[in-house]
Image (tube, rainbow, N blue to C red; front, side):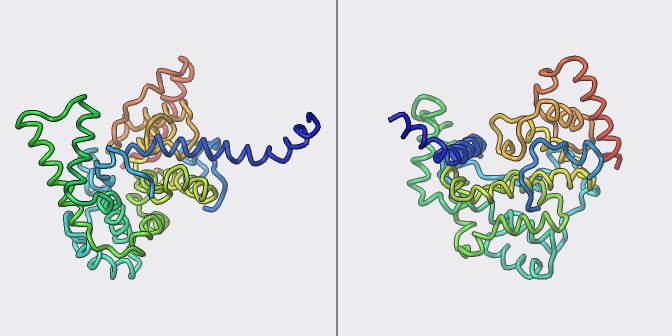
Length: 322
């Protein structure tokens, strides 16, 4: 009996290692969901620091639709001239998806990275809307979410008005996204990758948030483990490339990516408190970078804090002068 058991262990070992890795990545993706061809380089110092060179199931919070970084430039203080105003021939925000797609596809065929990014994000933004279903289903989910958050059913005009406004918003988003070709919709992450590889830093940063949207949670990770690893490495490279190009919004994204915790960005790198502190401090210093709420710096000793602040200042001086 013991010989049989000992003989079985070597055969199971490699599969247990693969399964364990899959569980770790899948757990990260599930936590993060609230919301080039090299192996992952989680341990490597980012280019910016060393100067030498990254259909899941819905829960109640999936009712919150995604907002691409490009759409919140004003909120995080990125000067329009620094990043460039959207081209006049791109469809206005809020254009019905089918009409926006009709206008964007010829520009994508011309190789326009900005149009490719915009088309990708139109499709990314429609992912949840396509799954919302009819109004009764949306209303039931809104009520279920309200009960989960408040411990009771809504009561009074103000609370019922809130549910009604959310229902109206989500119904409008569902209708705006109706009729998208399935094959085009399935290409959304490929389009986002293409725009990022063409040098569009909006696409580089958005890839970190949405690069796994089509993977499909735990089961998707098990089926696409190599692809998840490829995208993880790609996302890390995009972050470094965006910063090297002078887009200092990347600092805040890098800080979150290294911080770990409950974030859709925690899949990109292994958690590293020192690097999270460096990038968080740099984001606080850089004009146009999103502020980062982090305790990473406080987790370091006095010498590490001083070194992190020095690194942060050098990052800002090198990449964020303009």
